[in-house]
Length: 110
Image 1 (tube, rainbow, N blue to C red):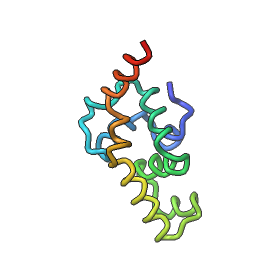
Image 2 (cartoon, helix red, strand yellow; image 1 turned 45 degrees about the vertical axis):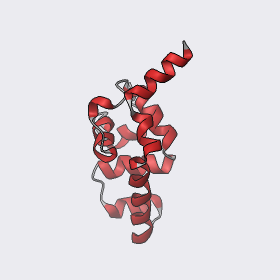
Image 3 (cartoon, rainbow, N blue to C red; image 1 turned 135 degrees about the vertical axis):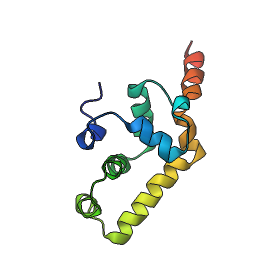
């Protein structure tokens, strides 16, 4: 499951749940349990470029490689990372990752 994702291009495991918990300042138990659903929410909240930057940055890819991949200079990379991590910390983004949000959706669909 989720073997052909941007995340797996840079990580051996689907550990995006732990990284989201870390950067969103959330308890890992509060985050959506289903990896496929959680990854779908992550994809819906970030642009493709932001998702790739998140995957590469959390995989500890060198900043020079990031600059080459995205055609950024030092300042643009710094701004892109700031914007990405700011977005992950925003309530409107963080709340979508919560398990309770999927329970609300499920109850509405029934």
